[in-house]
Image (cartoon, rainbow, N blue to C red; front, side):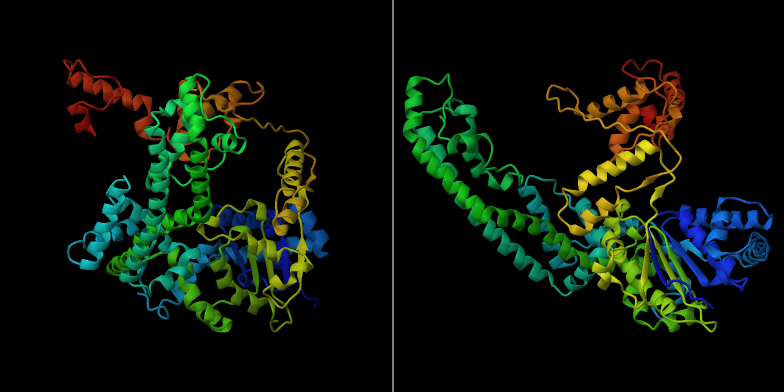
Length: 626
């Protein structure tokens, strides 16, 4: 029997996965071949879509219906239509009778399955519940830690000093929000290794480091303060007003030096107008300055310049370290409290018999991946020979490392029939969007690179690369724009892997879908604009109102980066008579009819309340309704 290719890397498309899946089950004499295939997707929607496409195609084939997929499979497998029709009936019936063995699932579902199987080995309760809302539990753990203030002296001193530090920095004293935000790194895969090493560090060591860095920074603040006060004193002693200096740049610079602690990292600059004035020996005074003041300014210019250059030298030598120290100090106390938060989190989980979905990959990485693959298969009760992984560019480093032992065993060995396993990776590194949760596109770039990166192959088998060159999804203008955009962007990338990736991205071929339109608009900065938040909503509204009449409004989708931006755009569109559907408009509190009824009830109940204004929730009755 001819062996199948062991290791293939494709560049995108769920259809490719479906096609390869169908080829394996239709070319096999084993009706239950599907039980040896594990197809891993990134979302439940993708898993459901892949299952549906496999079933739909098998159903069509079993009814002897022809489609594009049938034509492709016949060409690539040399199977006749009659054979495919016959096998499809038997395979479809086998899948429906054994649907639980139909292994198309999300990577989180597979991880959960592993955790369930190895619960005893991991010292976990066999009947644990899975909690998806990790943030709520973390917030509860932070509240538990804060409630210990007064009972644990070291923790109390640490948190009280942190509150005082925030007050000293002119920030709110409440530390709970910052701790809750910071605590999220406990569940971040990319930080797991570093956090383990921090567990060995005591609170005393954190405190000593903090004091050392703060002392170092105070010395620099004192040096800058001395320069700033000296310069300002010279200006004041000569009876000069700050406005007599050109744009008051020079006095303002020395003022900043006296308030270094309260400046943002980018507020102290040695470039721009003031630096140009000094470097080019321009006058420091304004045109309207009196002759006497001009003479005085000219007499002290050399001294002020020396002080400026002294501060510039100090800035170059020590300011970067100062900024770094501040960043470290800001995060030191939350880091020191992390152990407390983590212990509180473990107690909450233990008391409620729950596990966090976000921890599954780490649990496997710490325990199961070190076990031999045959042992893992034995415990699973299944033996997968074929692995399909969709959206590989978003698979986290830990998830991939956990899968490698299973995949390696499957594709580097043969079964009793002499068949070799297979790995199919599908993805597009340019579409990587999950770096924040451990996704590492570099993994896919390395695996899908040519021979110069062959050392990045974790398996002892040859790989076959196949780029899906034709874009069947988009119209020709969209494809042409993408090709030009990536080709132009590649020249600005210094990383050769990314540069090659972007260059490869400009070669998509066009299908039969001609047409389409791309427009790139820029919003000019307008300092006179009263409300900055209306700049983009106005531009979006203008574009929508000037669309070709052949477009329907429900063909338009507006994408934004942040939720508040979406709310601003949605509100402005609604105010200008453009009906929209969004997560915000679907809320009852934003429904005009609901608000009208509530307002009407309020007026009926309080007809004499003269100060009532529609839409405002100030009256006692209104608050009682809510």
